[in-house]
Image (cartoon, rainbow, N blue to C red; front, side, top):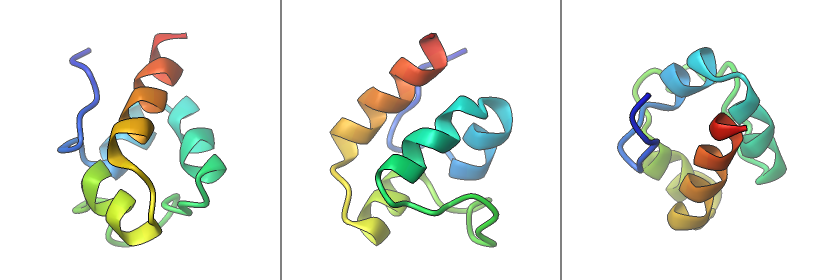
Length: 66
């Protein structure tokens, strides 16, 4: 799988790698089931929820590599 980037679509990511859901929840980004998740990128979600993009991308990649 290619690495997760700021341009990765949130809904695709959570469907493909359910372990990433917990990462979003830890950052109070309640993206699970959000109707715009199919269109929002990781960067969009970070902007909406006040999360640092680089940190979240690192954590998401770590979650899928475990």
